[in-house]
Amino acid sequence: MTKTVEYFFSIGSPWSYIGFDAFIELAAKNDVVVTPYLTTVVEENGGIFSRNRPEIRRAYWTRDLKRWARVRGKELRLEHRPELSDPTPASLFVIAAYLDGQDWTGVSRALQHAFWSEARDIGKPDVREAIVTSAGFDGAALLRRQADDDVQNKWSADRVHARDSGVFGFPTYVHDGETYWGQDNLPFLERHLRGDRP
Image (cartoon, rainbow, N blue to C red):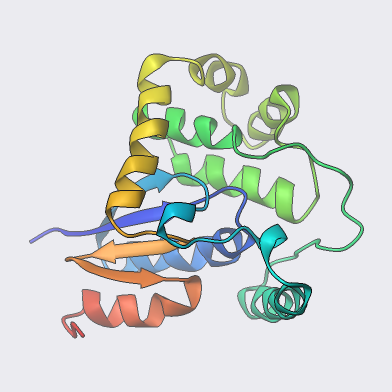
């Protein structure tokens, strides 16, 4: 029987970026079909944007991100970042690629790396077009597609599905009715995929 994982993530989440490659590798190794859902923090389920957390929690969050980035071999630029616009629209490029049967993981990887490792302003249409074009994709086509009804409808539906699935933060993986929140839960997800359901 085909194994499937619903993958909820956000381009604007550093944890999604840190755990992205590890999850994609895990999925490939375990013959998993991944369905991506892109949204932002689901506050109605208790999700909290980092900017709204007390400073002591933000300080710990930053240290933990740096530790995990080293473990995952990711360069993470958190300090001295320029003022960047909202990265959320970059999600529409990923959705368009997914709907068109393109390599949505490659589009995601390029945009996340640009935002989190290089502090590039992927909220700007011309910037994200250039980034994905440099990564070998048709950036102009993805830019045109982001306003199409099917892309916009999936963006809206992804948020509703995340809310109704009990998702609050990212990344979140759902397999066989079991929810795993956080890239640090990947070992538990893999155990489940191999038959050890909690």
